[in-house]
Length: 337
Image (cartoon, rainbow, N blue to C red; front, side, top):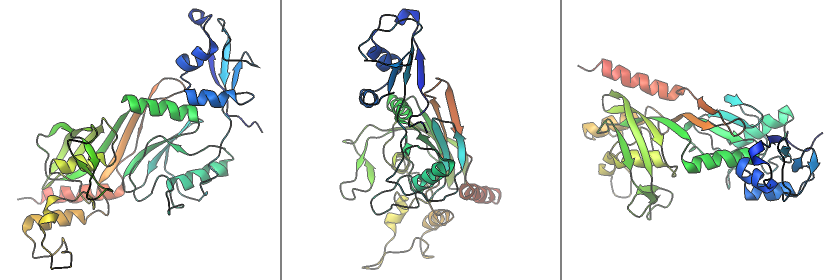
């Protein structure tokens, strides 16, 4: 069995004649310095017209450059049978519709029941050797589109698109209240909360963060919002929507401001469903209790496929729990006097 992935090929044009192979690899094929170092250490990593050569050679028009990456496996990830919702797959990328409640990658103390465990098992069952490389992350309780690269070259190119801001990531969320205006930008720097480091807050000393939003449907006390991330900070959407007074429905970490007004007996926490709470508190708690996680879904991602340069868009439909929430909001709206 060949220990390499199929080659990535580039044909030298007339205006590139006389250039160094190193220049072709880095500037035309977009091979990173790190990957170039790895390719140089393998017998078939860099080939010119079928022969192994030094990258200092000059190329001629019509020459065929090939790079080959050694096959890899995620031996540090335990394979585990899991139902996968595959949106798209070719020999370079795998796109999944991640369900809510699933962690993407194993973490300390959480080595199984992650999406990576399921993907590694799926690939092994197919007899394929790939290393799990998610090109972006989704929070455990966020559902939707997730892109996984099958080799380091593809991972590098999609990561560079994300850094450059050319990847279009769209989300949909159900939020409390109605954002004003109905369409706009939330430009608020984000950093860790010094009092609770696992949380993020909007703070002048934070990292630049920009979220664009648009209300696509308004309900009684809630809205369906489409969001576009221009930056990729941890918990960005959840933090930004809270910052404008419209937190995500069901979010246990970035909760509606009314929860801070709930008084509790000394040494205890009050329940948000306490019947003695004011009307607004009751409505907020009732909505939060209709879904067991933050109502956030990665609906689509558009990027340039690293192998052929075409723009590709991958989408995932609204999951069942968010559809049920939508129907409940619609019913409340229809019953409105």
